Length: 119
Image (cartoon, rainbow, N blue to C red):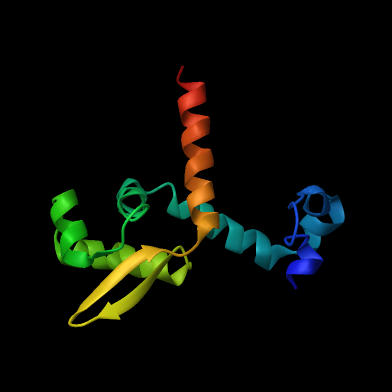
């Protein structure tokens, strides 16, 4: 499947910006919209930023953000559902980390855009 999308080399959007593709791939458009909606929530964005360089448990994330663990857990549930973060049990704790380099790249590109337009 990755070969079909052109992901093994350089990814190109050309295939996805045709009228035919846009009008016939409603499910993919909805998934993409859900993906980007996550980045519009400041708390979820902060959680992802905290996880960029180090995996952490809910309690640690909650302490850093000054939030209840239940609030952080609710945000992590959404991030896990959309496969932006992953969880791994280590002893009695569950550690969370960014799912993959693509998520990191989205955050990086977002920062570059915001910093560039705010110069």
